Each structure stands twice: as structure tokens, then as C-alpha cells.
Length: 322
Image (cartoon, rainbow, N blue to C red; front, side, top):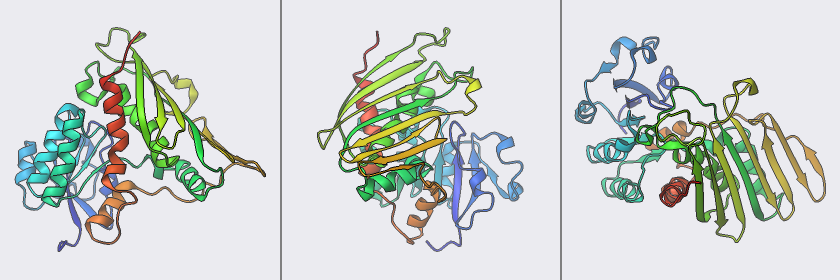
């Protein structure tokens, strides 16, 4: 790229939009926004120079935009918007789920390859701590071959949870995908098959909002995995996310519990106790910027990155309810 910094446009703030991360970034700067609340950008040092655009089409037509960060107001629309951006010559960074059907997911991948423009989902779960350290332990072979994985993702229920899954993707696809990433990107074993069950029990009349879901999976190496996800984390827990990940191998296990507060590595030779998680998390958008600038490749190819999304799309399509 010839420009001094990657010029980023943000569309929507329905998710983990990277606006604050661009306030003083060495590689990228925010140049335009659309469908973003003014309070999200008012405090930025360059707020006066950020273009406020009326529509997504305005961002597509802007020649001074290299990358569009998508947290679309309706997640159902996001895949088509990503494809339009790629066709317009923009790279795309998209909130999960980046697509809500397998055909749309395939279309994003094909369009990225055909246009030569880079696409990535906001898929950095495995590079946050303590999961980054757990990923390194598994890759080192300390616990042997992975045979079983158990994952939990629990968030609070609040009035902003939409009863229409087209807005945020729904429980399985916007929360469960994190758990599948933990299986594939942290435990390092790809899911072969998955089946899901979900319930609206306890949603208090919030439309079609699912409150709890689970998945049972077989892994490509012959192992198995289970996950639960829900909106049942009480505010008294003290952390927004009540997460748990246990990875069992032929030579031991590694685990993180209580939202990442507690970790442990135990092998057949020794109980190592808590993991060393002092190494800083690696920001996924930083790795994307490095790739755009030709500095270094992403840590996984696009197929591996998006396979957890593919898994939850398939599981959701055949999910049953009690």
C-alpha cells in the first residue's frame, strides 16, 4: 500500500467496532463513519477530520477508504455488505457472524479471492489471554493428543438483547462461535460434525430470543467436544463473561475457569499450577493491518479462520428445541 497509514471506515456499532483502537494507532487511522453514534467518535483526537457519511454506499464510493470495519445494524445484511465492499476495492473486517448462511459465507470467501481484497472476521478469540497461553501449551504437545474439549460461554441477560436474531445473529452464532473457536483455534482440532439444541425458556417475552444452547461435536481426529452458551450470567458474578475451557489430552489437561481468572496445567509428570499469562494479547486487527501492509501473514488461512462460523451456521440450521 502506498498510503502512510491504512485508512479505515467504520460502518455500524452493533458489536465490537474498533473505533477506540484507532485513536492513536501506528498503522491505521479512522477516516469515515456511517451508522455510528456520535459519542463513539466525539472524543477522538482527529474527530473533526472524520467524515460522517449518510449511508454505506457513501463509504463504498469514497476513494480514500482502504478498509471497512463492519458491525452492521442488522447482522443479516452484513454478508452482502461485505461482498459489496470487496467488489468496490475495499478490504473488510467484519463482526461475527460475518454471514448467517453457508452460501453467503462461501460467497464472501470467493469474492475475496477473486477481487484480491482481504477479508477477515473479528476472530481473535484464541489470541486473547489466557487462551493465547493455552494455545501455546497445546501446540507444544505437553498434554499429548487432544481427545475431549469442554467449553462454556455465559453472558448476562439485559434489555438490549434483541428478540430478532437477524439483528445480532442470535445466541449460537454470536456467542457459540467463540466457543467453537476455542475448540478449533485454541485446542487445535477441527470440528467434523456438530448438532445443537437451544431454548427460549426464560426469555421474558423477548420475541425469539434464545436463552440457552448447547452443542455436541465430533472432531476430525476422532475426539469429541461439548459446549454450552447462555444469557444466564448473574451481575453478581463480577465479570461480564463467565467462560470456561477445559482441554483434555492423552498426556494431561489445561484449563481456564471463572472467566479466565483461574488457569491450570496438569500433565502425567507434574501439576504445573497456573499458566504464565504475562505475555500480552495479540490484537487480531493488528495482524490484519500487518497483512495489508505486507509485513507478515495472518496466523491462519481464511478457511481455518471462518470454519467455526461454518460449524455454527450448520448446527443452527438443524438445531432442535425442547
